[in-house]
Length: 279
Image (cartoon, rainbow, N blue to C red; front, side, top):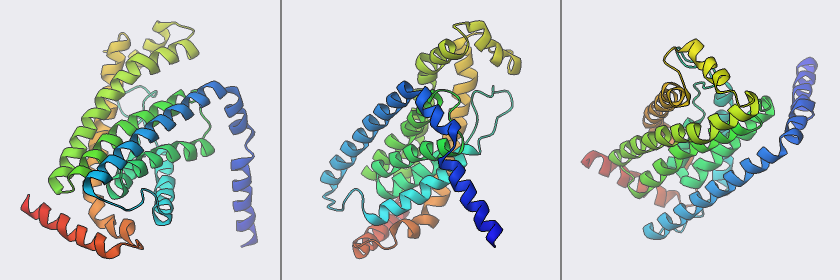
């Protein structure tokens, strides 16, 4: 028992006293600041959207409560673990890997609104950085947050304007399209040019060569995007959407338990179920 406690304390200490982690922050402070600004901007958009939705729906419940914060923290931890457990896919360069970290964000967004979903997407990146420091000067982490938010933000906004089964399906489809298109454009216009400058000394052949070794169809930046960013974001959005549809209803008691307005929430839940049957 003592040995186990000592091991846990050592792991926690290493997590926060990790020299690589802190040096990683110092060396890439500019990109870290850029990441912080981007996160703040997306959170503001989520907050603005949720305020408008609540005003239209005459919903007086607070955007964040103690209960919501606790659940967001729990799901952020799950999202961070899922993000670390990324896996490469056949035919796709290892610059792009498959992970399901955005699943927790979409589930929280459906339950609590856009702000909760974006917060999970943000905290997921922070938790990942504690376990595995950035190897891309935070460019990869910013891309992960933005691409994840491009799924979560539109999907949760749409679902919260029409809380039915049909609304959830439409939300996942629109969110998936948004993620695929936005993720591809972000890779083409920002991620690949930045990687080219930072890690390949501007040598496009070196970057393209990394992809062509895995997939001969990759011959330039546009084909790199088409055969990496497009399929990885499409597959991720489909998987996250399907799992959200399967898991949201069974997890609803976890999200709704302990609310002060339980009676109101119960009435809303019954109303949602009736509307879903009618659909």
